[in-house]
Image (tube, rainbow, N blue to C red; front, side, top):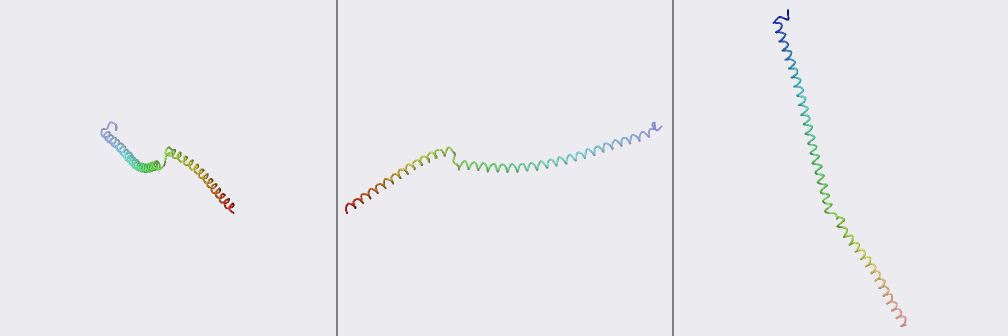
Length: 134
């Protein structure tokens, strides 16, 4: 008889409605928790990305500074050091000067020998003259 009782059916419907509302409320609460957890995770990821970006920017700045120093050093080297094409003519000139010096030294040596012979000859003549006078 309870099945056909309209009062009983109303209370069953009300409790079913309350049950569905409770289920929906619980589901809403879980969605809200999930959303808050996702929101916290996204905020943490963004903060981590910001820190990583700052570190990358600092490293880039340091790398650029080092690259500029290296470039300046290479420019100084290029400006101050002679190249092979610049040194080859100088090497040829140095070789010519060495040959000239060697020739001059040989001539000077030969001149010294000639002067020594002349002095020796003059000394010999002077000695003979002195010897013959006595």
